[in-house]
Structure formats: C-alpha cells, structure tokens
Length: 233
Image 1 (cartoon, rainbow, N blue to C red):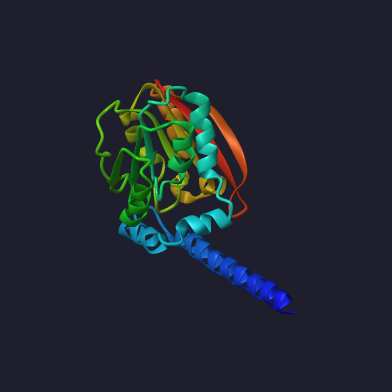
Image 2: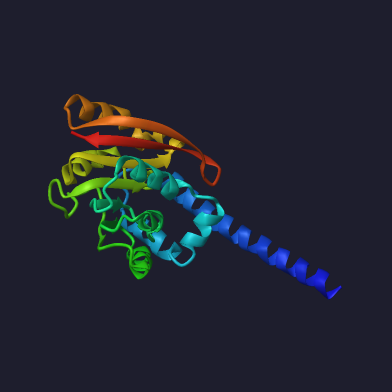
C-alpha cells in the first residue's frame, strides 16, 4: 500500500510541475502576443532574467527543437570545427550544448539577458559572451568577423525581426552561412510583414542567397517551426 501511495504522490508532483511549466510557457506566449514593434526591449531582458532559473527545464518539457535543428544545419554546412560562430540570442547556451560535443569550440554568445548568459558562461562552451540588445544599433563586432551566425528562436514579435538582417550579413564573411530558426506563425504577424521582401531585396543586391527553407513539425510547445539557411555573398 505504501508503494502505491508513493507512486501516486510522485505522479501528482510530476503533474504539478508540468502545470507550472505550462503556466510559465503561457506567460511567454502572452508576452509575445502583447508585444509590439518598438517596445522597450528592457521588458524582454526582464522576461528572460525572471525566467532564467527554470528556463532550460521549461523549454525541455515543451520539447523545444530549435537548438537541435540549428545544430544539424551547422554540422551539414560547416565542416571546419575551428569556424567562428556567433550564437545570436544564445540564452543559456542550448545551441552550444549541441555544437560543443560535435567539436565546435570557437563560439561567441550574444543575448539581452545577463542572467541567461551567466548560466551559459558556467558551462564553459563559449570563448566570448556579450550582453546587449540587437536591432537599434550595430552589433559590437567587426565586419566579416564570423564564419557563421545562428539565430535560434529569437525572431519573435517584440524581440528581433528582419530589420536586423543587414547587420547579420555585415559580421559574416563572404562565403559564410546564416542559420535562422523560428516559429512559422510569427511570419504572419504585423511586425514581420516585410520579412520575405527583405530576404528578396538582399538576394537581389547579391548580399546573400537563400539555400534552404525547412519546416519543423512541433518546433516549440506543439507550434510548427521553420528553418532558413542563407549563404553570404
């Protein structure tokens, strides 16, 4: 009987934890829904600072596939394990958790949340970590500094959008790659109305070329995702 009670208590605790996770993830969804282009990005930093202690646990429970998908792109298109890679919106370092075991060591993290970057730093996978906002000003990197740039799960209303593309291209060497993974439905939001036009304009100006667009079923919390691969020219 004690064994049955123990199993029951364990199941209840697991259910409670799942409910708490769903509540935090729903708070994220609500924040995105209420966000508008041009909002104070300090609210974005606060969102992730406040979420930092349980962030990895929560996104794992809702089966966030972004880092794994981006890791597949990197391993497919970048053979050189010494390549310099910018992880844009690195958060707690989930992408580096995928890339580091594959042998990629020259990784730079950029994120708006210092608390998430502190978690990433403790893992020891990044050679450099930078806490700053992306979009209002140029990123604090030289032209042609990186062999690749990964933006995983950061093209989100109120966070970052396609207006940052020229600066992405600026910091990636000609012949380098840009990998972007996002929730597909965000492309229908007002803030992303110019997304495909921006992609085409940069193709027409020979700044980059689109190599692939890949659907990602159940990308995050059952939402469909999409991955883009661009080559800088």
